[in-house]
Length: 144
Length: 133
Image (cartoon, rainbow over all chains, first blue to last red; front, side, top):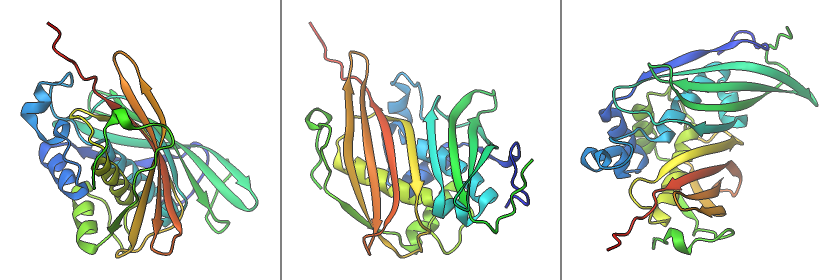
């Protein structure tokens, strides 16, 4: 978890290589066997030209970064809004980053607003979005 | 569950609710697949994945359907073993020459009827081409 929470703080990144094996494992776990993810022959015939990772798999990496930064507050109060900008493909490496953009206090609760981005190894944006976490007064918030 | 086609969906349509048990085997498979740090609670995105799975089971989406955007809001930590009920409603439908899109509202409740998660998903469906002579 972050030891101090303040505007401008960057969240510890999550870096994950994407492999077809990971995509297949996610399909098994989630029950989403859309052939665009798991059928290489089918995917090759589509405009995408090959299989792509499930968007929800990439979102899981975003959620992992938020959990590592904010602990169980993320799972109990988090809010996430993202747009998928480009597909993540086997062979890509995802780097999920985040930054605290602002902290708003309302009725003894702090709302921590973060910008989120996920890029591949070519620095192409895969996901952009925002996340909000509510923190109770005992969390250590530093106003900078 | 009988599936419905995109053509038959209209804004306001509510899919039949679907239940899942967030068993320890489901949770460990999920945690292993995404490499997340597991604990006694189900990762929030694992619950989201169930909601998406319920949707995929209810609609016969053509191959090549992709996710364009997603929103989630989490209301409480969910212990392993919880039974969830997933409710999905069509919010918006857009059909253009080159694109078909659906915006869906997701709500997930636990066995006590408490809302544990809500969200919105926008999905893009491939345009079905016909072979004109």
